[in-house]
Every structure is written in C-alpha cells, then in structure tokens.
Length: 426
Ligand SMILES: Cc1cc2nc3c(=O)[nH]c(=O)nc-3n(C[C@H](O)[C@H](O)[C@H](O)COP(=O)(O)OP(=O)(O)OC[C@H]3O[C@@H](n4cnc5c(N)ncnc54)[C@H](O)[C@@H]3O)c2cc1C
Image (tube, rainbow, N blue to C red; front, side, top):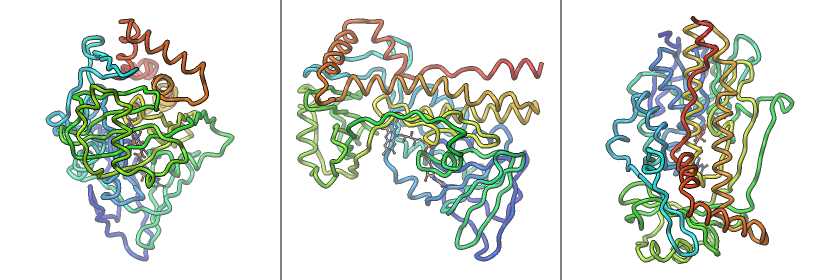
C-alpha cells in the first residue's frame, strides 16, 4: 500500500491533528475523501482493505458527526458490505433482524412478510452506531482523518493532478491526489464545485415534512409500522429494544416549537392505528426535528477525477429507508472501480462507475417515491387519494404486489463489476 506522505499526525475517530499553526503543509495520497459521514468513512475502510491509501477531510468535529440522528434500517446487502469492511462485529451482535414490516391503513395493520416473500430481511441498527463502528475501524487502521477541516476546496479535478486544500487552526494545507471522492452530503462542496453546464439535476420536492421524535421507551410494535391515516402519515420505528424513533407528517412551515411532547404523542397515537396505539409508551423526547422530503439525483456521478457518492449525488424521501443504503452501494461500487483501476491500469471501471450507480439509484428513487405517494396525505388531491386506496387494497390482496414491495424494501441486488473491465484484463 502507498501510504500518505503527510505532516499531519494520523488521527482516527477523534480529531488529533498537529498541523502547524502557520505553515502550509503539502502532502500526497491516492484518494482524498471529502466528508466523514457513512459514505466517506466506509469508502475509506473499503479502500484500506484493498491497499489504496486515502485521507478523509471532514468539516465538523467527530463528536458532531456522531450526534446526528438519522437512518436506522439496513438492507442485507449493506450488512454484507460492512462485513467486507471489517466493521460489522457489533452490528452482527446488536442489530435487530426484522423479517417483516407493517402497513397501517384504515385502522388495520397489514404485515408484509419480507423473509417469507423474498427470503431476505432488514436489520435495524442506528446510523449513529454504524458511524461509531466505522470511526473505530478507521482509528484501528491508522489511516488519516482530519476533522474540523475548514474551507475545503477542490482544484484540477478535470486534469491528471487534482489537489484539495483546506484550512485548520488558521493554516492552509494542500493534499495532492489521484482522485477525489465527494462524500460530503447534500450541502457539500464537491457537487457545488461542478459547473452547472456539466451536470443535470432531477428534483421533486414534496409538499410536507416529517416531524421525528427520539425517546427512550420500548417500541410499541416489534417491527416498523408505516401508517396511512386520514390525519396524515405516521411511522413507528425503533433504534433498539429500548429506543424508539417515531414520526408524523407535518406541514413544511411547521416548527418544532409548535410540537410539545404531549401533542406529538397524541397525534402519533391517532394516526398509527388502534392496535399499535394501545401499546404506545410515551416519554420525554431526547431529540425532535423536522426534515423536508425531497427526491433528487444529479447525473453523471463522475467529473474527470472527481466522483460523487451518497447524499452528495442523490436524496430520497426517507419513506423507503433507502438513503443510507444507497450511500453504501455507491461507495462499494466506487471502491471496486478504484481497485480495478489501480490493479489493471484501466480507465474502464472508472468510466462505468456512474452508469452502474445510477441504475441502482433510480430504482431506489422510484421505490421511495412510490412509498411516499401511497402513504402520505396530499391535501386537495381527490384523484391521488383514490389511487392510494386502490394501490393499498391491491397490495394487501396480491401476493405478487407484496413480493414486489418486499424485494425493493430489503434492497435490490448489487450489480456485478462491469464485464468489460474483466474482459480487457483477460
Ligand atoms: C435529518 C435527516 C434524517 C434522515 N433520516 C433517514 C432515515 O430515517 N432513513 C434513511 O434511510 N435515511 C435517512 N436520512 C438519510 C441518510 O441519513 C443519508 O442518506 C446518509 O447520511 C448519507 O450518508 P452520506 O455519508 O452520503 O452523507 P452525510 O451523512 O450527509 O455525510 C456527509 C458528511 O460530509 C461532511 N461535509 C459536508 N460539507 C463538507 C465540506 N465542505 N467539507 C468537508 N466535509 C463536509 C458533513 O459534515 C458530513 O459529515 C436522513 C437524513 C437527514 C438529513
């Protein structure tokens, strides 16, 4: 493995850089990864396992990154990628395997028997825990992560010698590299660095958001329950046997301050269906936030020596639990493309990265859009309501429709690495 020549001290989950206050450091690595969310950390770990050196630059502190409450449902393929990354020991021990998922409609709960229908299940394990595991794996690998890197800027990604600069503790630093991986989320700098005429954006913004509450109580139901109610959508979700994450649909201009815990739990009970509502145990929230819902894809995902992955490239509404899972499949594909490129000295795997990812991304976008359309209240749209009722009745009556939903919910299979790359090597 080619190791970074760096003046910066190796750091893992804790920011521990000793970068000089005044000097500009110049270092080199194979891949600079911008962003230490799940996509960036996992890519770093997968690259390390195949002998490719990478430096991770993150603008926040490690503590801040760990404090973000987000996803919690992992597809089977995601768990297998974490096995490959050597970061799944705790997940395999503590993750909760769910063989089914509930859909509440007109007060009744219908179970979609995932395992029975398609032979696969999902694993409930909080994104925070996953991030912690990846940070620990990175610290153990001795690879460089730089937290609190300000003003990260990309240079020369259209040519053969890209560079990334950043500031830390008042000094400017530069890292020369072969490739840049933009894993810096929806608001990051990487996608923003691409001129508008070089990419195409597809976007759909939904006319509502999700109000989410995290609380330390046992879950009201052993599996997730997504409810379509006349008062709006609700989701009973969990992070562990003692911690719930519950949501209600809210308007886009709503504010967290308008929702006392009592108001939230009352509304949640009204929407989630009697059977589940009767078992709801309430407690003061430990986190409460509102997230808007959007579908977003940028094409392509490769711009010269810059590659986008995860939320930097696409956003899904959380209804299908796909955001984190898609970030994992993107970086899995990217690590394969980089591995094959270094091994075979071929551009083909890199050329095929974008199309390979986008085929999976659009299928997940479709499924997340479909789940969102069927389960939320779209006020004033009587036709949409009739379509929802018809779709849901069909789903509950048809084993084929249930198998289709289950196949998508547990995650579509990963595509094998491109045949053309293998052919060229042979
Ligand atoms: C509020 C919220 C709730 C969510 N809930 C769910 C859910 O219930 N289910 C689900 O499946 N998905 C959910 N998601 C989506 C899921 O969390 C994301 O898909 C997932 O985090 C994507 O990982 P990522 O690493 O691509 O991006 P991120 O997790 O966003 O990580 C990007 C990282 O890049 C860093 N960064 C940004 N800009 C810069 C810069 N200029 N320089 C350096 N670093 C930078 C950020 O600080 C961040 O650490 C939610 C997302 C949000 C925002």
